[in-house]
Length: 361
Image 1 (spheres, helix red, strand yellow):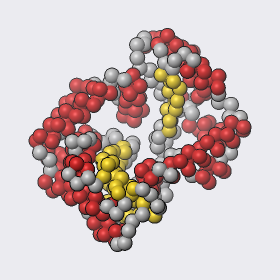
Image 2: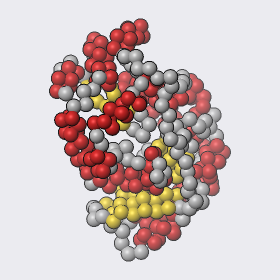
Image 3: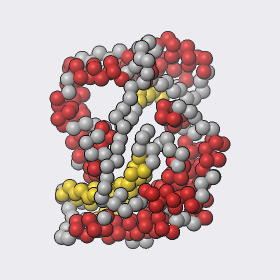
Image 4: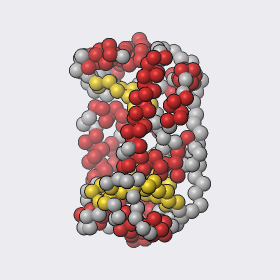
């Protein structure tokens, strides 16, 4: 392992990987002249892992510590609680990290079986971004990518929504702050309304000029962290509003949030808000393209999930076509009665839980 890291870092590069709900990504960022070395090493790492028992046992202890670390971070762990509420007893509702039991009981045979099932050419995609020649990249890929036959990519268990009433869940813990997240089911990353959804997110809480930031933090000082975000998957999605507030102020902050949610649902948005949101979306996208790493991830995601890459002009056309009525219609669909899910970690006082239960419902 040390030699692998030195082979990249000793050339001024970086090597890493991450796992999300739907994809595992192994990546290298390195100077152009070292691309052949990076390609060879990365392919060897993915195709030919040794899976030595000693390495597995060591990594097991590392992951168990990582699980403990995130459980000690309320702002992170509260999202795991919410996910399990929104997709109960489903793969999507489980933590990407796993649990103490699953990691402890996982065997080498389990890992080898998993790799054999999923690490097939039909599931792989190679993305290279930077000052490169396409023919040279193809040559390097053909040199190092092995042929692992699979007639089709592996499938996944579809998520399903079975919510009939608003739900709340609390984890009582002595913390310096109370952390909570409010979640609503929404459309998938494949849905044509995803640009409408993105603009709704920007207007409501995605940046410092959003409604939630202004009302919760700037005007009332109820939270340092307040934001909305999207978690979009191939077949479903979630609209999330999260905050970290002083103990004893969770209800007050949530009251303001629910008021803003209802306001955007019933009264829509202004022309100025819509224009600023469109400019922000397109501006952030153009800035993203200045980074080779972000460019690579953006193109990779779209090919992997959508099997196509839209040009900037095509995206601009889709974004600019969104109307105020589009946003109002989608807001009414997402923020529907009985559609809220509320997870909270902290020390709630007195009747605060009862008051929260009522406002969420």
